[in-house]
Image (cartoon, rainbow, N blue to C red; front, side, top):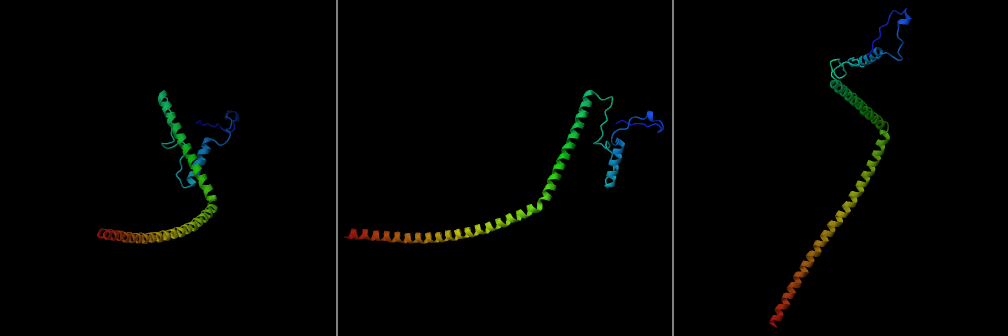
Length: 166
């Protein structure tokens, strides 16, 4: 950051050329005032433990590279977080804007599913009734076949006995 010291306003030759756009101090004032107006504590850019980076002359080459690398990772993480938040916000907005038609479509689908469920339950109950009826019929036929088999076995035994005595 460079700071410019201004001379007296009556000496135009000693002033540096005016920068384009707002100066850094104006940006800080704007950020500070917007933060304080929103009820958040004012914090200028570059303040706080996560925003300071001060290389010193005593830093070695590797320390400087490591420090810059850490700073780069923090910037990347912040950018990635901001992008993620923006995408989430955009998705929420898109979802909210189309939610009423989506809700009515879902309600329609739910009603159709309920109708299908009722129809399927009705069909299943009919099949279950038929299966129970078939089971009862099979039990009766089995019992009848057992009785016929028993009577045939008894008849066979009676014929064998008669032949043996004859």
